[in-house]
Length: 393
Image (cartoon, rainbow, N blue to C red; front, top):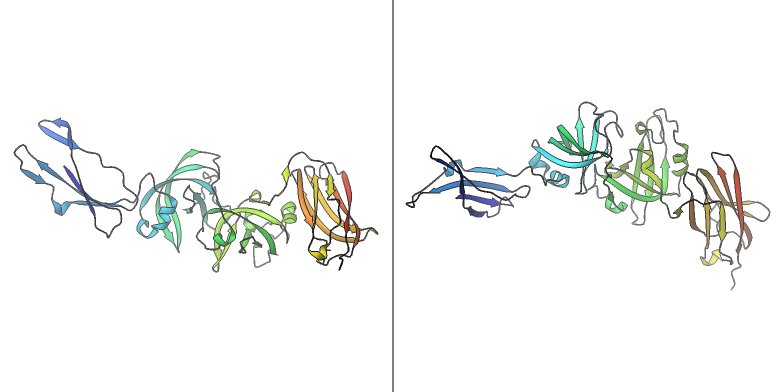
């Protein structure tokens, strides 16, 4: 028989198990016995020894002093979350884990070589190398055997070898609200957030990146840190590279952003790696639309907190300006002024306020949609009246 103790929670009372062994081969009157032990969970301690009984009932065993004890540190089922939860025990150990590359090396940072790996456990980890490794690409599904390391609190995989299982795999991400993200439990993990831009600071000679602050319905606030080294928005000379993204990243715009979770001075921040990781939070319908504008045909009274609903659409690759004027042609406010590469049909509301956030007087106003085709240079317009009523006592 093979006797072993199984302790899935080291420090507690162990479970003692006996398994019969069977002879499966013989060589020159020497019999070889074997048995099967089922797989154990990560972190389980196992101690085992064998007992031999002959036909006369006499027993002998392997020396209990030499009984072997193992802690299961690596298995096919280990996840990145388990690595991070047990980083102290695993530090210096060699493990094998499967996952997908979310951000390759030398994208977010160019001073050190870090890539980011994520799996189905919803956690990410850093792959560190002393040299750049261009073989690691976004969307690579890999099996990596590496040494676990913890550097200044950062969990890392070092001294690695990689087997690529697939390419262009779906990028795993964790969809969070900002309050959850602010717990800082998702550092080095590829996450998705959305929020309304409430502040923006641009690069300076001493700050090589832009900070975009967003807030969502949870009330949480976080910072989108766009390093110049990514060439997403600015270059190393603090020059704007992407005017379309610059137009999007304005105060008041609702956006979605994917990126690596991070923190600075104890506050959360998200680090996008590519321009396509940032987009408008779309509330319309994509399609093949022409320039159009419609407003619900009744007066509304902003002083009562009423709003008016309107819908508008626009074609691909166009600059869209949606503004409100009074009947004399005097500008009241801008409702939308962006470039969009995709045709959309959208619904929105106007609260009857001007660009100073003041309620405008009762009367008839004109909502004016102007769409300029970026490729053809052609401009099309549509106009619809809107009536602001009088507040009655």
